Amino acid sequence: MIEKVTETTYRDHVRQNVFARAGMAHSDFLHVDQVYRNVAEGCDPVRDEDGNVACRKKNIYSFPAIGSPDNGAYTTSGDLDRFIRVVKAGELLSPGLTETFLTPQVDCR
Image 1: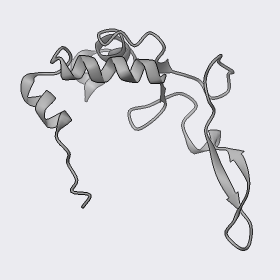
Image 2: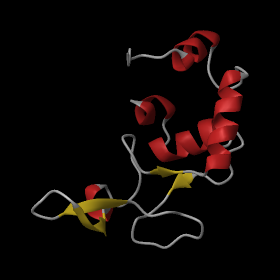
Image 3: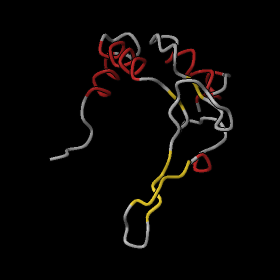
C-alpha cells in the first residue's frame, strides 16, 4: 500500500520519512550478502538432542536478500534512541498515532 500511495519503494519511503526525519543516520535496509562495518549479524541457536545450545548459525536465509516491511531494517542503539525521542516529541507521527504508539497494546500481567 505504501508503494502504491507514495509511488516510491517501501525502503525509500522509510528512509525519507522515518530514518531521515528522525535523524537516524546509521539506519538502513542492508543486503545480507554484504559485510557492513558496525553491524551485528543475526544468528539462531543450534540445539543438541538434549535441547542445549550446542552452537549458533547465521540466519541469513531466514530473511529476504534485502529488508522488507516485515523485517530487514538495521539500526544502532543511538538511532533507536533518536527515534523514540522524536516520536515522544510528536515530530514524526500525528498526535493520535503518537499516543497509540506509546500506549502498551498487550497486557503482560
